[in-house]
Amino acid sequence: MIPFKDDNPTTIFPFVTIGLIAVNTIVFILQTFSPSDPRQIVLAYGAIPNYLLRFETVQPIHPALTVFTSMFMHGGFLHLAGNMLYLWIFGNNIEDKLGHIRYIMFYILGGIVAAYSHAITEPSSMLPMIGASGAVSGILGAYLLLFPHARVYTLIFFGFFVRVVRLPAIFIIGFWIVIQFINGIISKGLANHGGVAWFAHIGGFAFGILMIKIFLGFKRR
Image 1 (tube, helix red, strand yellow):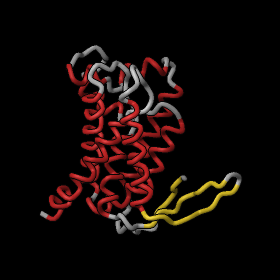
Image 2 (spheres, one colour):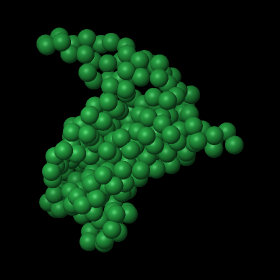
Image 3 (tube, rainbow, N blue to C red):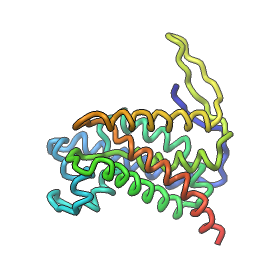
Image 4 (tube, helix red, strand yellow):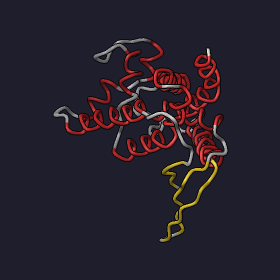
């Protein structure tokens, strides 16, 4: 099941959403073609939970700054493509609601909350976290609250056959967050596990649901 667009119109051009996609893509290209070892780049600028909580400066920059650098780094093309696809589908409507400035503030704050949500659940982890997933999760939470019945065009695969169906956002995003919770719970039973920072997604999503109305209130004032 792969969503690829919604039928939720907007009134402003999504400069910030397109800009975020462009910056993430440029950073990924620089990561990929850098003469430095990509693993060393991730270790240097990824958000490492243990350092985030202890404020231990071992990396080239202060650990608090890695929350921002890690937000624009990705571990592979599919990682980047998945995050940017969801940002493109759902981000423009949140930008439309908040306006450009509040939208970028909302996005960045969602990423910060997501990073620390993961760090708190993995306080001793030395594995760097990278990706826009946490910030994008905040966008998904906001979209679910504001547009639960908006229709999302989705590819459904039946073996070799593919069909496009229009599903309500509450189904698409609801299914997504349930998967995050299930995998997050399962991951807690695994020692020294790597891979996906499930609780970053959950934390970012919770931020989106809880804070979108507050940000909208700021806009009205």
